[in-house]
Length: 403
Image (cartoon, rainbow, N blue to C red):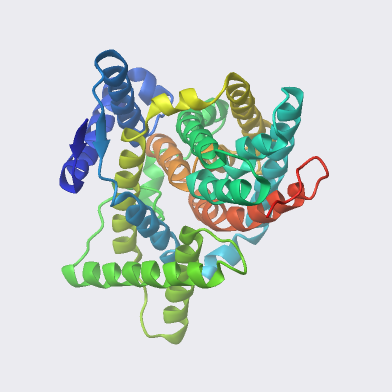
């Protein structure tokens, strides 16, 4: 066992990002199908570590103390950059996208439960391989896994949830780019020259130059820190009333903080500084999450569970092409939204952002997609998902609560 401390892990994460950029620029397949750089580099490292463990018994562990804070900081920047007037301006599109996203939650849970019953599994397995871990990710999976174990007597629910969420994270980062690439093949794209006429939103063009002073950077770090502090406290306060993951509380705090300060005329958030820090946190989080994947743990999923997850991946791809893309207008923005939906519909919001960045970096900006996906994928979906899961648990096919 080789252990990398927090500094070694940070070095490894930055090297993974540089490796991913080199792979995408050097291998035509990755560039053609717009595989995100953190996904390319992180998965290659995870595969190398898998081979090293299986062939030579070598195992590398990482100090991931920074991973969750980086994720929370990323969601804080989403909240700080969420302008409520902009969200109101995209009202119709926002409502349509929420409708599409909620529809997928019901589809995933219905497919998961139906396949679990067909394969002779506990229907709770179907929920774990449904919206809990796919649209919900690792955080939601861990929370509901604990509930299933304590209240429904489902042993090893948390371990199953983590394996399912890991599977989804990998596939969410792999299918979004190819699907969007297929969709934009026969439609007009804005082209990279469009960035000269419109200011990119926070996460839309991560490599765009942004002039920032040290004072502004310090102010932005202070705002992010406040979001982390207040959001974590808010999650503990609401724990007994309403289950919300910490990152949702952090994001909500960011929305209230930035818009409240703006309305009072006290301070206006400097969105360029927020976007720079947000993109750094996003890249480092994804690199750490993917390079530390213990792919051998996927072997803990029995064949029937792998069948369910494989079918869910196909369902996500078909839903993105035939529902998300068509309902959202069958245009370039709809294609980018479809790539983002694949990212958080199977994995997590950071994966969705990475998917969209890979597409817009090649074909031009999509302000609509970068307005809708961060808020819907990081905020609305977790609130609605919790309600949808509770609705399904009322069905008579599920065991009664124990204890």
